[in-house]
Length: 378
Image (cartoon, rainbow, N blue to C red; front, side, top):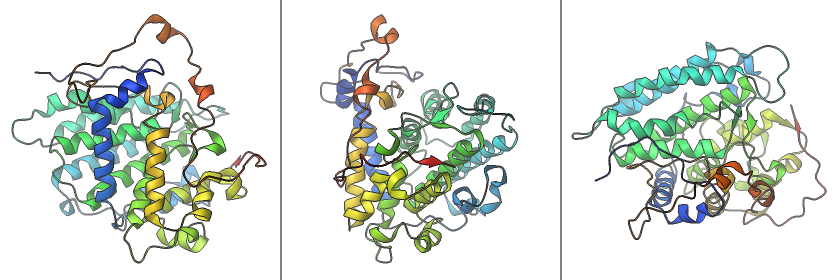
């Protein structure tokens, strides 16, 4: 029987992605994604959770703090949700205690590395989580802690992208799988993701984190993907939801930016970028030109996620595998999958970034964007 073990790297070259798709890990991530996406369907983020200042254009990074949220009483959720929210609050406080280094910083602020060093101390608070009978929280955290620690961006590259977002999904999935989060409600899940996204957006704003593996205008978003799936699902079966085509209007953005993650994410784009939306975010713009139903938006975004996140080497190479969590085991044969960790794979720069730079078009993307100019980041 396998023992808890610190996650390790298994994906070294492009061919390993095919093995990943055969793995128990891939199956578990896909299951977690679908479970959470459907749990939040027709559910709103509770009032006082999302900080409107973080996605407001007229508020600067230095002015964003936690004053924009009220939160909910700890008794509103199961105990372990409260413990996790406490950890996220402490991580946000650590931003306040770690100001950015002054002076020009072209590729991100190096104070982010100092913040990351402080994260390890804060994550010790995860031992306050109450496990079900028969599970040692210390054993569980040998593997699970890795996924949370790697969900805040790379302290080496000073960047953040969909791979880090995936790591948080993996962490939440691990908590659900081992009943540390016991049958979480859609509202509980939305609160955990909302607080995570607010924290990450503060990191992006304060430390000027670079987009990790961004396709530029050819990508859905510089930093995120999952947030759009969750937000689209929130609008599914909601008879009061705004139409897909109306989302980019100022009125809709102001009305829904603190209750829906999709609108919240769009609002963050408007904070970061100037210029015509169809030029700096053509894929998202196409959704609101070509799609009429939120169920179709969700379906298209899920399909795109499987290809652009779970199916792309530049992203998934940074996902590591445990013995009990997200194991590198063939789902059907239950045998270990091969690991191609030869020197050539480790030392030779992959050309995959060039091969995949065009990305995979979303199902609704049919227009020619060759005339578009690069976006202007504020």
